[in-house]
Length: 602
Image 1 (cartoon, rainbow, N blue to C red):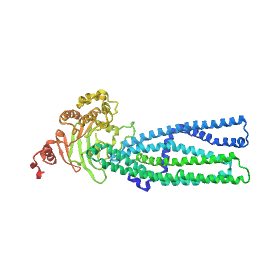
Image 2: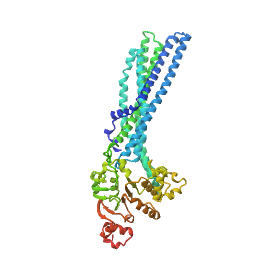
Image 3: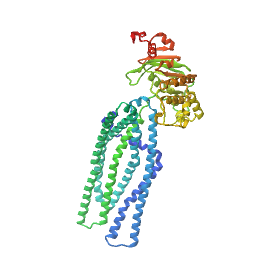
Image 4: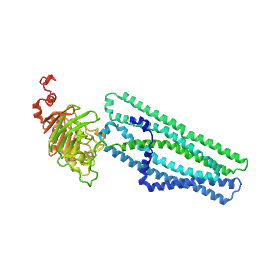
């Protein structure tokens, strides 16, 4: 999205992190257990150098090796190692289990939100970009819960334990090491400032890459048929190069501000510590064990800092990804939602299927009206056909009836109730939609007709297939109704896919039928059979049909002729022909009538 280019959008909001942490709420008990185990593992790890110091100063330097104490010290050291390994294993398993459950919940929430958005959102958002947010971005968030939080907590505990141990060994030197804290905090802050914008650009480029890939795969038929392979390869390569460049900038920042800079700080601090012990040795002996323990703790002090600096990389990716995900989750619903907020409330039910458009004007972009002052009524059992040239607004009427887009000027009503009064489930279950290009899901034939509605029995599915003349070809399939359907039903002919969509619609028993040139993909012989099925299907149901072939809607009760978004003619077939207007011209053109009979010879 271009808005990511703005510098105002690249700041990681603290609210994003707080919002992420709220997902830990349902996991308080396992989280508490993981933190306790983390604390135990950190404590046992910190005690190790103390035992080695005792061994060096009390026994090794004095060449005093009593068997009992040495066995006790050795056993204690090995025991600490085992406890550290055990509790580290348990806390890692718990943290990662929590992370997986959180991401599972988040992905479901994002997917559910996407399904609730109006079609205008999908008009302006590439499918690949959405896939990137639901998969790649949530995967980046998983790293935050799986490794970043545990690393920061563990290393925070470890730093506290190391400082306590340092003060135990040398209070003055430990106090000197405290001066490192503001320097390290400054490095971390600088890294966040520099890396945040880069990560936004990186996620944006990855979304564009996925969008181009998704578009290319979906349009492979056209790409190969029109020999567009080289052009698509070039465009994909340009986007891929942009992604590589942003990743390269990320690598440069990491190479400068992560481990190398921390290693330099470690070496400088080590020089200060050794100089301190060297100067101290001029006045009094230095205990070798204390020197070993302090140097060991100093190394351990910088190791968690290195770990946290390295995890800052993942932290930045996670927070940027989370902001992109939350922007999607906070997207305003672009289709009006039902006023009914609970199943307990009384909500309207579609009983008769009377459809009414009342002075509806609509624009997709808020500037150009594609519909102007549309008014008509489809009584229960009637068929209303919409005809007109491409771009006249026929499909927009259907989109508004199905509430894919909000009606902002005028009103659409069903059974006298405004469309917004109906819950989505009620509205969509009572309107049966048959598209010109039907969509089939991966699965078997029976599942594609049922579409997850457990109330539809196998017998109803087969009766619906028989009703639309689909039963014959289904039973000829290798496995009949259990035959597998590939992606989008690619192995079926367009006519077979259309017949299955008809069977799906009949099985759901809608009150209102919406037909978008439903017989366009069916051969003449099949069309004759399907037309007789449509006659039966329309009985007792309101039908709104988009037609390009006027021969298919001659029996419609009302034909609306749309031109540039307005209804310019209305009536039945014979009435419109007798007026010798736009409908008459369209009919003559489709019938191959004499051009001389048209005004101007058009």
